[in-house]
Length: 206
Image (cartoon, rainbow, N blue to C red):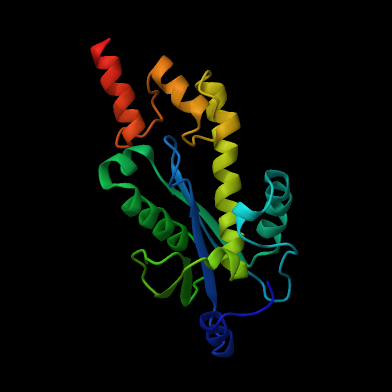
């Protein structure tokens, strides 16, 4: 990830401090959606940054600490299951990203956002489709968000045994859907998602 895209190159040429922003957890049937904002140090960028989906869980874990220690600043934030159900997942994603940027200690002047939509921010921002594969700071944010969320799902697996959260991280796998119908939804399932609605309906008829 050495070739700068135009939006990032312009920020660097202008000497502006900017952050990369991404989120993880839009697709799963349960748990919070987690977002991260990262301001990288241009002189100390961790090696191996790329879209978190393109690297293994082990590699993401290996990159987590270097990103945190080498970045000029970072913040991990979230939108809760309750907010997802109340607002819808798109708005919850935007809220989580807004919170991540707002939580930065350094005052940056621009945000580069993964995707094609912009959250509400008090600074200029640019949406970049597939930004997690094109911009190092967005890639770093994608890794922090993904690792943080996966770690939380491991803990939730202990709290809510039987669903297999440690393995599928909340995604709608066959095993998860079967457990959902067998056990019924638990406190962290997203009631607004169709498979969960189906399980709730079946539970009501039982």
